[in-house]
Image 1 (cartoon, rainbow, N blue to C red):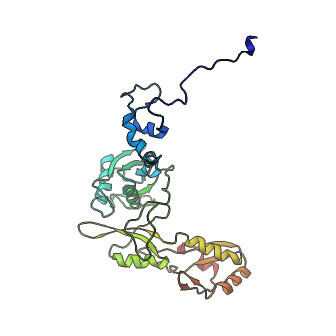
Image 2 (tube, rainbow, N blue to C red):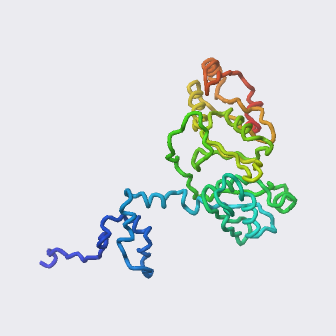
Image 3 (tube, rainbow, N blue to C red):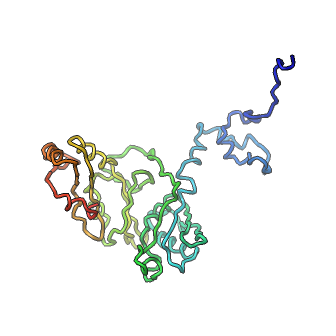
Length: 325
């Protein structure tokens, strides 16, 4: 008969909140620092009043900010390759701070806070104060620490200059919830996000107006900033922008696909200092001549981005090499 008797459950305190914490979420409790990992000593007594600030805020608002991908350490880190053999942790850190200090896109001084070169000296891990500082440092890709040093790639035909990249587990920030875009007003704040575009190696003699004019040939700008020295107003040859229409490429591909299978589509971009003759044109490759003829008849004379579309045939060999990519 003992087997028929219901087994009494032992109280383990699992899923039972301590007194005073009934309205505190697990994320908020974690952020308080009053709940250490199992086995770790408690540094301070539990005090529900310390979490009153969390409880007075809208649900999840405190934890949401702390848990945003843009606030993670990975958003503030970069891997740097191809540095000179003579480089040290300090010289790499000094290089970034020298390049970034006094720029109009940097909020504080000495944004690079740490550098650690790997034991095999194949890369250096750099950390910056903010995600925005990190994005600016990423735009220095290709610049040389010591242009005359043959050890930074020039001696064996390898690419010269630093090679800078994000960590593989870096998460691009989601679309920011900024106020509605005001038509005709170009913001000078380009938020980090999936639609932020970085343009490097811009000739430093080009003015802000000239760079803006060049970029608006592809569409209306939502935000734009040219990196400049705050003291001399000298351009650093780097700009950031975001377009109002973030789907220009997708729109063109979708429309052209109505007339046949699109094998390839290229929209040439400026590549200073050399001139890209394809800028201002869109090259579409169909799988058959018949599809191309159908597209020519349908698209010629139509409007795209307030411009009249002019269509003509091009030879495949002259259009689709990498020089118009």
